Amino acid sequence: MVPKIRRGSRTHGLLVYLYGPGKRDEHTDPHLVASWDGFAPDPGRDTSPDADPKVTLARLAAALDLRVKQAGDKAPAEHVWHCSVRTDPGDRTLTDDEWNTVARRLVHAVNLAPEGDPDGCRWVAVRHADDHIHILATMVRGDLRRPRMNYDFKKAQAECRRIEQEMGLRHLKPGDGTGAKTPTSAERFKAERTGRPETPRETLREAVRQAVAGAASEAEFFTRIREAGLRVKLRHAPSGDILGYTVALPGDRNRDREPVWFAGSTLAPDLSYPKIQRRLADGTAAAVTMSVADSGRSDWSPPARGRRTATGIAERAAVLLDSDDDEAAAQLVGLGELLDAVAQTSPAATRAELGAAARSFERATRSHVRAERADTRAIRSAARGIIQAGSALGRGEDGGTTAMLVSTLVLVTLAAARWHSARGHAQQAEASRQAAEHLRAAYRQAAAAPMQALRDQGRALPEAQRRTYETTIRAALPENSTRPDTNTKNDALAATLAQAEQAGHNPEALLQKAIAMRELDTADDVNDVLVWRLRRLARLPAHPSEATRRPQAGTGRAKPPANQAGVRPAPLASPKPAAPDPRSRPPRR
Image (cartoon, rainbow, N blue to C red; front, side):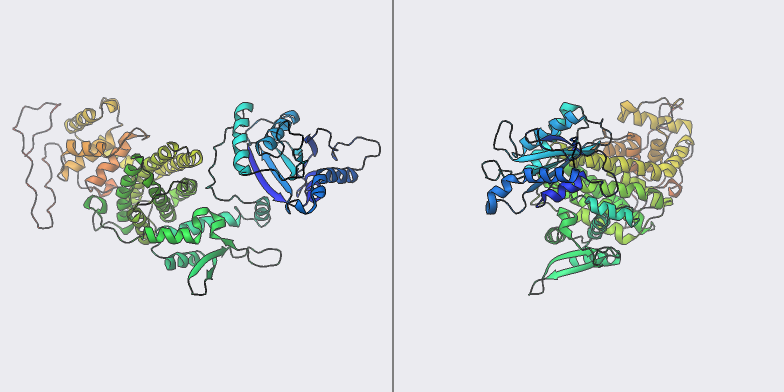
């Protein structure tokens, strides 16, 4: 149940709209369901012989405005309080009596007409559709004083949450005032008339959000806005300093044929110029030093290296979120930028789901929690690196590293959901979970080819070698125990361990390190998560077609690569030859 509150100065004009046909003849059977005394005239259902709806409507407007006229100059200029209350599309249709109860509880909750107060404000509730009512009240009490209506929106929201629970309606998430402003009805109707899939406000919000993702300076931010095809206008102080900015969509004009400008703060609270300026100053997206495990090989494409680097940085952001520190709030902002960067440069097959994930998570980046000492340079730099590297292909190493990064982002967004839930941020927690679902869908698309190739390689391993890796996996993950001859869910993990061993790593130690990085309880498929962690830690190609040649039966471990000085690490001690045993590793040479 969603309340929407506005204020105005024309009682009669609003009644004309409520009892009229609507802008598209969508109003059907307008009538009162409640009023301040239960005896207000109803222009929609006046059955008297000489009834004239226009006259009855004028009488109703005069009755509502009586105290306003009596108060004279003491009445507020905007004396009309207008609240529309709408149920969710999946809710049952409420009766007129139930809507009467809803209206009375809301005017009581916001202190317009407290129950039992004879001097409460005058009000009516009009129903002209199945799913909503409009409450119109005049804000002058019977004693000619103004009602005390501080925080009326929050109070109306809280009462709606209680009504939902008592009436068995869908329970919506309470907000905290940090959400972006939703498009008005006029904006939605205009978008439909002009054939736009969304309102200009929504298009501009996403474009500005993408422009700030990974930007290193204000100049770069404004350049990106212009490159996105938007009109931008800067407001300067006499000193020449920038005070603010407004943006407009080309072709979007008002009735006077002038561009419709939106200030950044009207698009979203965190897109105001001062907040963007602070974000760029606090977390300048300079280049970060990539660890060996994160950077990968120099012969991989820039998009692949950028995604691999971002995967390691996202893992560290998840650790900060799991620490339950308020300073992690800054990581959420950086994570939003990272999702925007990935969505902008993703392959066509995953672009829609990744874009939806970024739009959903946008709500999770804002709360009243402030991080005073957080350093976001690493995660903002990861977003910048992805954008500068350009679009990734949907195949080969680019597609594999996309799957690697998205797999990690699923767990990070779930960590964000837990972080918000612990603080009672219901809307942000739900937005994080929605983003995770979109990321799961994108992961399934991105990982299909590389994971299938890995499973094929795992099934092609010699039986003795495969049993050895199965033993290693079962020892590390007892809940993943399978019989190699009946279940193949460990095929990709076994192939990865074989390639890691060929590259000079100890499979058991590497697997334990991957497991210990962070929790696996929220993973849909633990094996998939571990495959990508192992391949990143061992610097294996994300796409198996580019992996080193897999070891054959009876062969030893491949020589590990030389370090920068050209010296190869000393080989691990080899066990003494023993009689063949399917439970033991093949003898090494």
